[in-house]
Length: 123
Image (cartoon, rainbow, N blue to C red; front, top):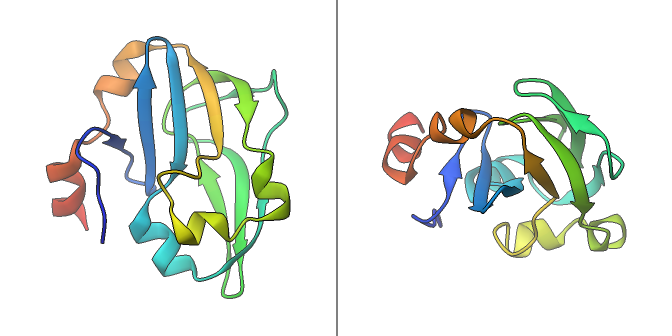
């Protein structure tokens, strides 16, 4: 499994890439492998607020529907519209096929996420 070391990870199996005050959020390789082939990804609307530890969407596969739990607070700036037609792209490359980009509300929440070593240990 692939776990890029430049990312932060949540205990709910999402990855976070930070660029300034913008966080890009997606599903980890571990999570996509557990879910199986993704059939649908429900995403919030641009401008919506997401709250740490609250759901912001759903990833539905042939096996299960799983809530996407926000790793941080923020305002949705962008959604990956390509996933509406090709949710299985996450299975092909979960790190290239992000779900949402948010404006970070609280930098300390990002600092509280796991690094790659901690995420691997948690698995």
